[in-house]
Image (cartoon, rainbow, N blue to C red; front, top):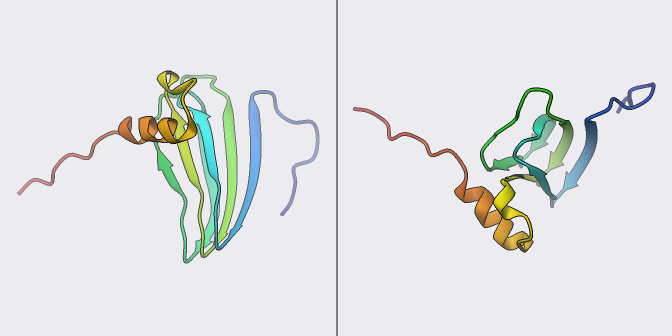
Length: 104
């Protein structure tokens, strides 16, 4: 993997995740922009929570490479602050936009 040269860009973070038969949980505020790239073989990455990015928001770039595994990205609203991780995951899943029922 090529690492960018030069100083880091302010307001930007880069994560390199490699999962083999497992994965990681990543927690970010719902006001942060998340960009995910990479590939999965017999696995996938999942995102939970609503997106509320604002213009000029910090960016988290996630380069995810999975073999029989995957990562979970939880976008946490402000009301999740101070909760346990289990409760925060529940809040993020409840904040997801609902899909509309298919029309006939």
